[in-house]
Length: 258
Image (cartoon, one colour):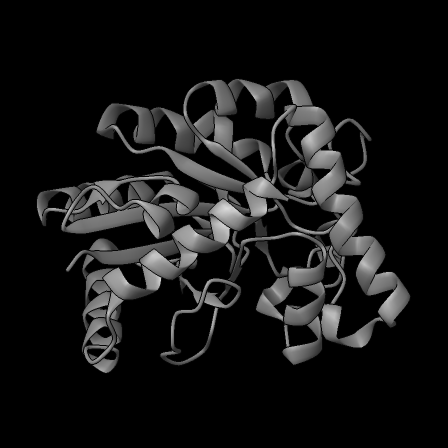
């Protein structure tokens, strides 16, 4: 049965010391080591619906930082790995740095430029290179803390904006901060998403609207990441990824018909 590994990155930077930023040399070493180990790349949507390799790797990026295009894309292109980018849709083209809780501390300092988002034209360029562009809500709130009305607006509005800009169906979502509960999952389903990603602190059962990713953080080398991946794989050994992928494929078909 195919195994599916989904990684969660944010920014790539030589100088920015944020927890969600990885150094370019670490990023390159991490991906090269996984390719040497037999992993082959796919977008999240393809990994969950039609994995073509025994070991399928989906590289995802939350927040659509400019460094994804400038520093991550050349490495991934050389390795033949497409990726999925989850976009907070209030920010492309706004000229405003992304300044939500956790990022607001960097405003006004020497690393503020790291908070700039890719433009829609740049995101379309990545899509044309085989990447997937998914939603990351509109304004990046903690979804479990907002009202039902705001929850619906954040999810549906983000999906609709992605579809308008990309001119194709948007079926994938990443929950900001990985924050979700049963109410949020139900709202994501109602908003028309087929897949949604989390970043759990411990091993979690992979389900289409709660798909666990392995987060990658500042200062982590290739060896450290490999160890965490191995521990995660052992803890979910009893699951059947191929069966789960078949369920995700059925959900994708239903969403396309809708």
